[in-house]
Image 1: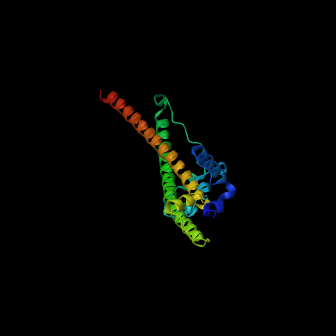
Image 2: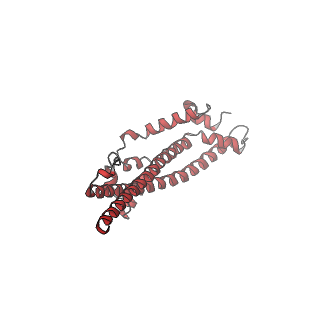
Image 3: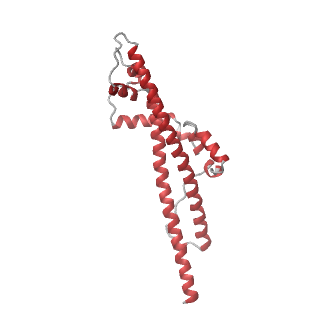
Length: 210
C-alpha cells in the first residue's frame, strides 16, 4: 500500500531525500510564495501569517503599536562615523532618531515573537491532525496494519500542511534574528551617543569650573 504522505505529495517528490541544499531551496520557494518582494511594511508581511493582521489591530487599539512608524519605515539610517564633527543640535537629533528607531524595532520584535508562538501552536495542531489521518488511512487499508509511531511521524513531516506551516515558521524565525540584531545595534548606537553627550558635558563643566 502506498503511504499516506506519498499519496498526497507524490507530484512534488516529497519522498526524495532532503538535504541542506534542498531545504534551503524549499525555503526560498516558500518566501517567493509569500511574495516578500512586494511587502513594503510589517502589516503586509503579517497578513501572510495566521492572525497577524488581527494581532496588530489589537495592539493598535491598546496603544501598543505606532502605526506611522511601521507603515513606511523606509531604509534603515546609517549611524554617523564621526560624532566629534556634529553640532549639539545634530547630536540631539541623532539621539531622538535612534531612540525612535529602538521603539519601532522593539514593537516589531514583539509582533514577530507573537506570530512565532502562534505558528508553533498551529504546527503542533497540524501535525496531530495529519498523524491522526495517516492512522485512519492505514486502518482503512486491506490489511489494516498501522505502522510504528516513527514511520507515521516521518510521513507527517512530508505532508504539505506540515511543510507549509514550518516554512512560515522558518520565515518568522529569520525575521526575528534580523530584528534582534538590529535592536542590539541600535542599543549600541544609543549608548555611544549617550557617552558623547556625557563627554561634551564634562568638557563644558571643565571649562566653566576648571
